[in-house]
Image: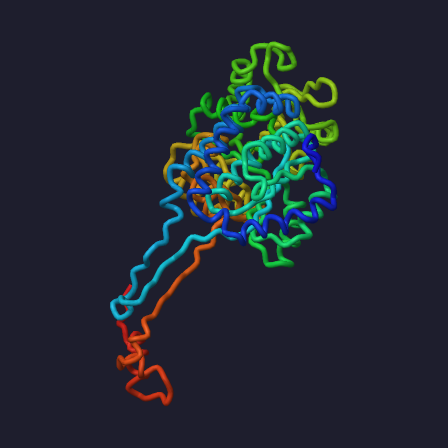
Length: 478
């Protein structure tokens, strides 16, 4: 690759996996001291280029500086700091306690890097969704290729430049380009693939990975529902639901996709949404004084608008457009289950409100559908919260808020079923790129003991009784 370019040729990309494998087999990335040094450099990369990263996000996404800082830079830097503060503990082999008769055996679990990793990032959060996983790969001792989305070219180009400048080029490489470049990378064998994106491409990644039995982390999203119960605080609920929806113009895997609301409180909830909107945006969102992002490109804008045009619901707020990339926050009421807005993940600033008779109906609808990445529920009823835990499935369940779970790095984040598999954040990112390898050392001196002698042929009744004694253990009554 030319030093002034951010792109490799196809021929150069073909050689990269072998280069990384050579680095990994050399043992270079294994020492904790090396991992720490790379993480420190990674942290400097974020700190020293904060403004440039925010500007790149503004250019590609129209992302407000506040959202760029809080949703892209802070989570990435937090992942780096968390890894630096805990890497020695995470990487320490663990002695496993065993039964008394095996107590003099050496029984250990070694956290070892899986090997060379491929990280494929999407366009909607192009910095954090590329580099948050990278923090886990570095901490685990894995070399990695980062493949940013071609739909966020400014961030992608900056990422290539910064990684080349700050990190070890023998272990960490950004490969830019589109489908041809991604296809070349996927045609090679990797030790772990971390993909964030949509279920359609997720299935392709899973199929390719299966050819080599490669482990994967798939973060796929889906139609994440909101359940509003009659006992909720309507004003707070409306404010938090709308806040979650307008983040990145709704282009977010955990965006509140649609809201199930009991018919009895729909008028109050709708009016509360309007008040929240007026508070968030005292002027029209397209006004230059307001910070409001854009759809990533006109095709995505047109797709969202087609959904809005085909709905049989009633637009009670928003619906305005500007140019071919901007859509105002929009609330639509009276949505039936077979509406155009319910056919696929909206991934835009459109919020459909679906009337239900009660929360019971909402729970049943969610339980019968694909597992979403997250379920949001607004209620203070502990019995209802337990029902949601017991009767529904999702990657996460969040009570009385939206979106904010992304700030809780101590909890695992990931999908289930249709919304993906595998988790990351904090130590879970380290675990995603780590194999927990068991180690057993049995002293040869034990061959002289009666138990070890009894295991060898010719078998005896005495030996059989000794080894199968556990089968006589009395089971509890209940």
